Length: 320
Ligand code: FES
View 1: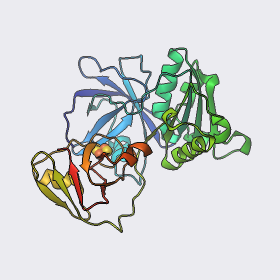
View 2: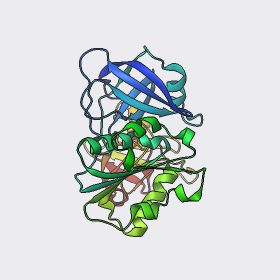
View 3: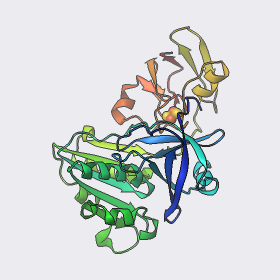
């Protein structure tokens, strides 16, 4: 992990919000927290060498604390387990300043879709839109009511009437019908989707089938889908500034090989989710393995995420 941590916060509340989901309230140890906008996330230094990104779900107009929601995921790389099992009220934690790759756009109307723990940035969006008096509707899907976090907060909010809950359990009438919830494209409406990969893909495919322009559809993935590395081959990268060439073997990333040679590229998630390592490609064809770039950006082949992506061509010329 590169990039400077910027502030220390104290955990002032840890609340079980739903089955396997805890929220953490974070207050600055000293000074003020930087402002943030809905959709932003922070790096949390869970412990030495373990940094994870969590979306802020607090009200963006309230500055005294941050709130994040964390799903315990035993099958993940260990960050969420450590948050649940090791971080307690009173602990001081290092975090990064908020970054926002999922901002709200100026729009006549917004349609918000949250699946599971994807509710965290979507809830901040609902808070911001509600505070601004904007027109929006929110659809929140979970496996069961017990797995839907922040239900009490939503029920008490001024936008409770705008939120539709959908559960995999229960009768068919309340389940998410993405085609119906999206409806026909409207020029002034923007769509926001966050949740598990399958959920996001389903809503995006539904929007595409209905003819929604990609520029009006925004999504944020929390993790990358597993990749079949069976067909991987070595490739070379050349640095435009120095002309140095490095071989990237199977099983190693561009970031790792360059770091071994004293060239540090800032990284955070190291799985193609956050965009921190994004780099311009001047020649060659990347094999994109991120979930950060849009389809259009990927097709342009002029940038890639060296923490996880590889190359279809024998050589990539990097703007480094
Ligand atoms: Fe997050 Fe590469 S470090 S996309």
